[in-house]
Image (cartoon, rainbow, N blue to C red; front, side):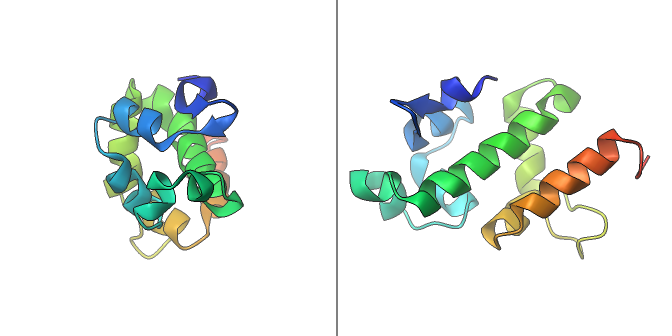
Length: 116
């Protein structure tokens, strides 16, 4: 899905992301390691940290979506599938710990056949 489907006026919109993944904006906040006020208060939604975490999650889900056939299935993978080499942590747990770049590198390595 295009990144614009998750954004509103140039910012990632927690409500649009939640709608696409059939969940709540509060759950999206928890998924990226933020409090619910980070997705409810306009000033917090605009903050660099909130936007960065939302962008990281959306980029990861978009990157794996072709493998799963839908954004919803990719989101389920993001939340629940332990990644090899990361002590059983999921992509969601790694993003929450500020390790989104490592998840992206892992996905790129899988795409390149390193872990095939």
